[in-house]
Each structure stands twice: as C-alpha cells, then as structure tokens.
Amino acid sequence: SLAVRQSLPIHFNIQQDCGHFLADVPTCLLPPIRKTKRKTQKGSKSSINTSGRLKSRVVVITREVPFQTVADFVHEGVTRHAQNPELYERQVCLLLLQLCSGLEHMKPYHVTHCDIRMENLLLVQSQPSNPSASNATCPARLIISNFSQAKQKSALVTADPGTLRNQSRLAPEIVTATQYRKCDEFQTGILIYELLHRPNPFEETPELKEREYTWADLPLLPVRSLYSQGLQQLARLLLTVNPSERIRMSEARACLQCLLWGPREDLFQALGCSSAGPLSGSTASHREATLQNWLDLKRTLMMIKFAERSLDTACGVSLEDWLCCQYLAFA
Image: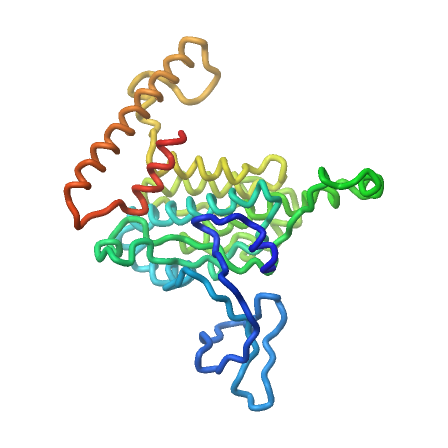
C-alpha cells in the first residue's frame, strides 16, 4: 500500500511519492491494456462511469518520470541479447544489482514487496543532461514501484507485555511472518530467468512447487556470455526451496558486485590460491593479502579514472561508475 511505501526512508531505487489522489482519467490518456484487466494501486478493478470514457485511477505525483518498464527493456532487448549477449547480460546484472539494493534497504523496516515483476520495475534516465548516457553500459536507474501487495511485519519489541502474552498463543509463522520473509528473494530468482528471455520455471512446470525440488530440477540458462553461469548460480541460490537456506538479499547484491567487477577466479588460480575446499592458516593469510592488494589496486585505478574524467567537462561520472564506487568503498 501507499502507507507502507511512505513509511520507508528515501532510497535511490525506491519510488518516492510527492502525493496521490483518485481521479477520473480519460481513456485516451491511459496506457493500452495488454492481457489482463489493469488494476488500481489498491488492487481493485477500475470502474467505468456512465459515459464509458472515464476510468477511476489512483494518480501518483512523483519526482522521477520513467521512460519505460523493465518489461519494455526486456522486450526490446531480444535482438540485442542475440547479437551482443555480453553487453545485454552485463546490463541485466546492473539492473539486478539496483533491485537488490532497493530490496535490501527495506529489510531493516520489515517490509517485503511480494510482487517483484518486470511491470513493477521502472527505468529512469540517470543523466538526462548527458547525451552519452544512452550509450552507457548501465541502461538506466531502476525504480521499484507498486507496493499494493507489500507486507510489513509489526515490531514486537515495542509492544507492551499484555500484547506479547497474546502473541505467545500465535503460531510461529504468523508471529514472525516467515511466509513472507524470503518472498522477494524467490521472486528475484524468477526474474533472472525472465530478464534472460526464458520463461518463469514455475509457470512452465507448475508441479515443481508441489514437491521438494532441487537445483537439478531448475531449467538451465543458455551460456551466452561471461555472466551466464554466474546468473545461473545466483538464480539457484535465490530459488532454493527451503527459505532458511535461501540466500539473503545482501548476499545476492554481493554476488552481483563480484560478478560485475571481480575478483575473478583466475586471480586465485594464477597465485596458486584455490577458492574451494578447506583453508590452512597460511593459505587463508595468502588469500586475504591477495584480496587486499587487488582491492587497493582497483581503488587506485578508480581514483585515476576520476581524475582523468575531471579534466573533461563533457564527460561526467556514469551510473555504473557510481555503483562500482559503492562496491570498492565498502568491500
């Protein structure tokens, strides 16, 4: 609901409302209806007045004006994915990274979106004044919208003792809302398939949910680029059937950062520092030193890059640069 969204502090990847109201909107101003009957933000079906030309809609005033949805981006990207899979799948990683960052921001406030789909993810130009932004690797700033299905767990910590006594008689899954806690992670796993032009595995094979499926039961993604196998593994981790074993949104964000900017496996192999299996004390120390050296080098190169950019007034910092800086600053 709007109340849940407005309870969240401002975040770069969550839609912010300046206001909203209910209005009768002329049909000619509404987007075309595709497959299903469109709904208002409250989830109720649109009502048509006696003239048949106006429809009642929730009108939202927002600072960000999206130019398309992620669904539009994916639909337009079919040819690009076939002709330049490396670029397209890197763009997918950058969009997923922004999605994970926005969803991770909600976790401390016990908010679960529960309706992560391509139509609810909007794209906003990150640098409208920069004509070269349209050619950047990162397609756009991603905005999470439509909180009509969102769930918010009330904090029991602030409840008085009498309330806690009543809560003690409820089943654990109701008190802790565990049935929703890892819902966004699961839906993000489905989204990975859809972003890569593959069907939702659970629509294609509905019986999967009726049994304790394993990773082997999930369909394989075609290996088209350097990112394909990493996205396949991330989808499996997010779609793990047991919620307690499913990775958290913060872990998914970290996976995407490593997939985009390294360090890559060959760094460890070149130094004889295997990334699998148990580590001895000396090996662990060697790996830690290797990672620290890698991180220092990447940070230095990023600062040199910014220094060079500062001499060119026509070229500013791109959204991908900013996202990479977040990774290197807090890694």
